[in-house]
Image (tube, rainbow, N blue to C red; front, side, top):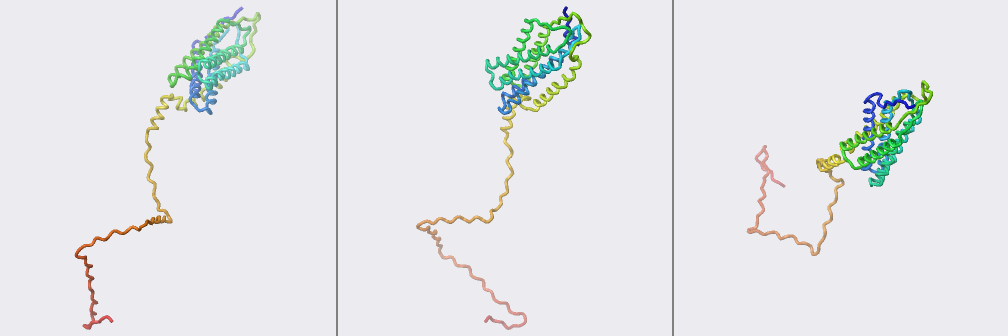
Length: 322
């Protein structure tokens, strides 16, 4: 006997929120990957690690938000927490392999295809490991063609996203690429969910093992969402990521062409002790002074004014000099 599955028990709320989280993680991851291509080698690993964690956290959060709307009419659903956390680690690590390949080996067709395969397998592996953490009164069965289709969607979406990250420049183009990646990742999730069927046990009990889906909402939102907010804050303060490479280079060129104002004149202080004049070089034969021009009649010296000693006031007798 198979259970009755409803993947949209909360209507369009869970698919919409899941899509937004996939877009957020994809946008942050793609911008970090694009930044790593145009940065110094010492900072490259940091940007790539931040991008891998952003993509993995965004996809993982998308998956479990969408799983909140998954409901089986005949049986309750629970989740195994260690396997759920393992799916997050797998998503970040395997996606990181593809991202680091593009960051360090370039964007040749062979490298891009290999990185897309690793990243796509990481997305699909996270999905199916997360599905294996689900506990129901029965067991899950999968349609193999639909599973292969979901894996193919994940690989194609990851390859296209990595190509866009290192090829398309500018904030708007990257935002559009992240929206397309969000559609692909969310579509991969619901394609994989369409492959699931639940075969119920013969004897049904009142409860199942594991944690209830509602008990996972708080840690699911607090952990990855806070990380995505921090990653978005880091990217927001990076001018190259916000403006884009073209606008950033134009701004730098404009500031380089501006001539700075001249510096104020520096005061000139006298040198103490005063410097001695250099000795005059002696030449041989010695230089003759130019002859003084003679005028006729010769100039007479001005007559010296004669002065007499004034007479005393008290008498008429004149005192003569000795």
